[in-house]
Length: 152
Image (cartoon, rainbow, N blue to C red; front, side, top):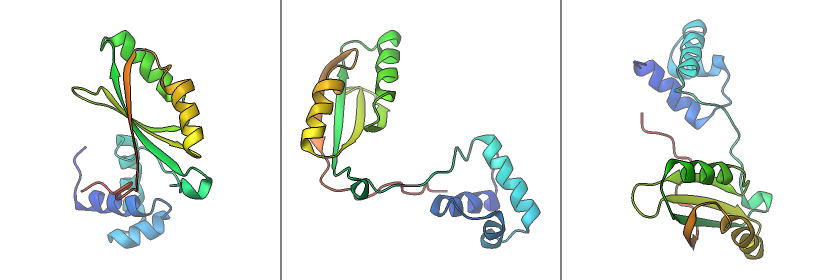
């Protein structure tokens, strides 16, 4: 999809505040309501806008522990990758999973209530993931950048 400056302005505004009404959005980007609405629908249909959601604060919700887990797989064949990824998706504490080039094969971002909850998660679920050769974890001291808007 070819985007012009108005499309990029719409995306930039929505990255900052996804709850804007179409009227507020049109006002901020300098379009009338109908063209703004058409552009917004086109951006949604093209997949440029995947979804709208609330960003929650983990510590406020009692999730005070955060760790990055680096996963090295025994075998990188399609069957192993598919089984591993399906199992990871089913673990609610894994809030981000990225497949990487090289070693390690994956990076998981997990949250938990505290260290004992993380240890139980690690021992019961993470270490039992299919195809895993090695897990290496590091604790997150603090988040410096989270959910930063994409550069448009």
